[in-house]
Length: 291
Length: 291
Image 1 (cartoon, rainbow over the protein chains, first blue to last red):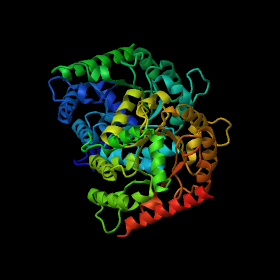
Image 2: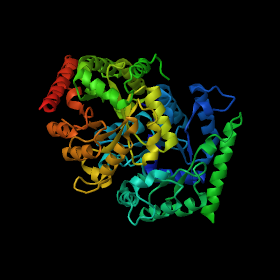
Image 3: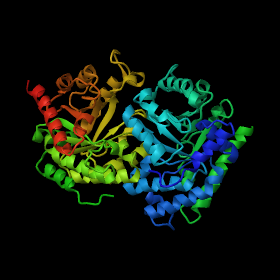
Image 4: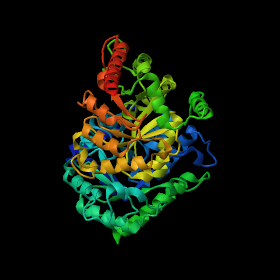
């Protein structure tokens, strides 16, 4: 499906030749170290929200995303397009998603946020979609079906899998268990993630609105990458999440820069505004890291 | 996003004018009654499995799916394309998905099986994708995030939402609870589905490999549509599932015809072979219904 050569494959081979591990988590933290950034920028495009100087069409969205990527890539470890925003635009939106991942061109880690979950032979198709058709570095998955549903995503150590373990929304507890429980489902999942992390490609999504849960999850899963959405619009406490997100080095927590950053300006300066927003977030994170 | 007029909208208005309810469940059971069929045919296309007389390309898949739809539509209440199989083919696959739904053209209910699950503003995008971009009649959703994540899918009574509540795979219990538990998560979800079903558009997916769970779920949710995948390849017991799937009339259980039916023949007679397979399944179901 890929319409271009695979520079990443060469990158991974180069890592192998030099003796460094090609696992996803090593790649992620190498990228974070090189950029001194734990920022992940969400690329959730909405046509009606495009800046006033662009047409509110797929073509406008393409120009918007390319400019945002180019302006911010220096300061972000990862980009995270959410499948829903592209699928809402139909086949043209999925073409746009493929184009944007091509445009990123391995200048940062790409996490395709699809919350994929289905029985195993179907999950194998999602693995092909994410890793072959779109050449993403990592995905998010949903664990409602249990671990055997997720296994087909885990076969390639170089490709990451973030389990959507603890969500940021109010009604999460009915399924995930409560932060006050001694042994809630999300903590059992955190423990399983740690025990299944030998390939170096498992991580967990923990909503930044729940800093206490970030601490508990990190204690149970000290070596895996965490991904925390919900800082900003959803009100997550950045300093606490970063502090609690530290694991055994180099493991840390990717902080997702959401709508506040992507839509930082509705005018022609949009790309520079997003760049400034992710740089500021990076600096705030680094201030906590160096404290 | 839709590139064609909306005959369904007219259908729903006609139903309204005649005083009949336009709710999804009423539409579903009217379709099932008209065809005397509880069969749902899964449209999970794989290029390498296409019949020998067709090119193993997107174009071959298009011809395959059109022929299968035309040959079987008389005997099925619903078609169920699974998003994974189309997304694995990239943007061309998503175009194919849209084309096939267009080709079905309201001759049967379309259930877009995406196991969609994300926080609410993102779920709103999936609702736009499923109901506006693809004009599906129904979707499957994943409830790991809790009920507030599913709500944006529920706003239109005419569009159905099947919650993936009890899956057919071996590892399901770790999250969903065990069939031996007095109050497992999947049973709490079944109860919630019943209590939230006033709009007439909520249903539940229950794996056919767990006939006892179909019985329990039906007791807790007597009026909602059930959808049971897993008969055939996965070994579900058809007779038990149909018997236990009866609810308060007209509520019943859609039986998914999976790979056995879709790939009934690898030769040029493939469409007639699928037609024969769904007709046979329909007859077996009806034999239990009339017993």
